[in-house]
Amino acid sequence: MEKQKVDENEPVPVPAVRVDRFGFVKQDHSNSPEGLSRTRSAFEYERLYLDGLIILDICFANHVNETLFREERRNRKWRKMIGVGGNDWKHYVRRKPHVVKRRIRKGIPDCLRGLVWQLISGSRDLLLMNPGVYEQLVIYETSASELDIIRDISRTFPSHVFFQQRHGPGQRSLYNVLKAYSVYDRDVGYVQGMGFVAGLLLLYMSEEDAFWLLVALLKGAVHAPMEGLYLVGLPLVQQYLFQFESLVRELLPKVGEHFTQEMINPSMYASQWFITVFSYSFPFHLALRIWDVFLHEGVKIVFKVGLALLKYCHDELVKLPFEKLIHALRNFPEDAMNPDTLLPMAYSIKVKTKQIFSEKRFLAKQTGVLGLFVQPSPSISTSQIDNRSFKVIVIRDPLN
Image (cartoon, rainbow, N blue to C red; front, top):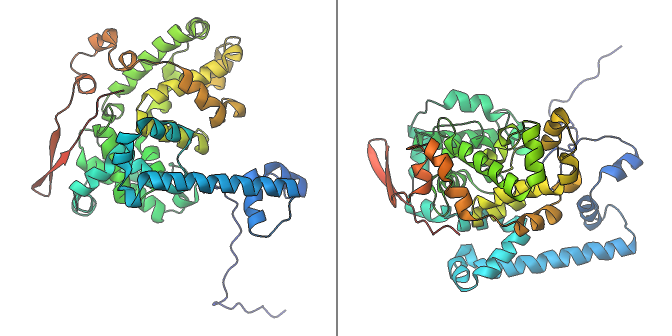
């Protein structure tokens, strides 16, 4: 039998990959129409309808059009609020801070999220004040953490198309940002959880923008510095877990008592909440909504969301023995992960700033370690790059 000739110039068919609206690969549970109807989201139907690929019931079509109309109207409000390139943002925040807070809590439009994150975090100012610094860090410096970063790259958002290709653009960008920060702050260097934070940022902005937002977060451009989450011994993680446990006992006494009886402590389930700000293992749409508020209001939202999750599942949690309790705390039900349900509950929980930043009993055990997180840091810090010094101006607003 004569072998069929293969045209080398003919493109090889690539299997279609189904992804959600954020770029995460979706698993096909069934090829049947019934299976597809169960797994498709309303968003997918809206997209197929707009592309003319399916015909929907007239009532649902009207719903789609109304949804898109509301979304476009919302986008126009946000564009008017931030101005061209963000030029009007600071003026609007000073003039109408309550409007800004309310709109951020409702969720930043996805198409504007990257720009707004830079504006509310203070990273845009750091970028403008330090031209060329990121390029120097990436190109001219070496880091002791390079092998660790390379080892962990493929573990960061492995189901997202941007990071899946080995040595692809996503993995290269993530490596560059993490390597640059490990050089910029050699005391922190690199810790595995940082990859999910940097990866999240890279989905909405360039490498350089993501780097400076990471700097703004860890050095405290607007809110309390986060670098203690990644220092040796994770001192800030220990502080936050201690304070979270105190809040559970105070605000959810039955849950706190049951956890004590079953010997459950927050380090068994909540460490990743603080280290990655819910970007690890939580539904991405929920993580984004939390990040919107986190960048604007600070770490209190992490405490509030954690407390809201426990409150939502309160009746079930107080009945479970140790093994099932651990599983439940790492696998919350789908309905608990609905941001429109969970976040209003979180906003209603009152957590005072002093309950997070001024826990005397904890600080007494950590003398000299956590002073960075309760004392104002200097407004100017200096680092060395390629035998030349540069300055980063950090302007910190008072904590809410």
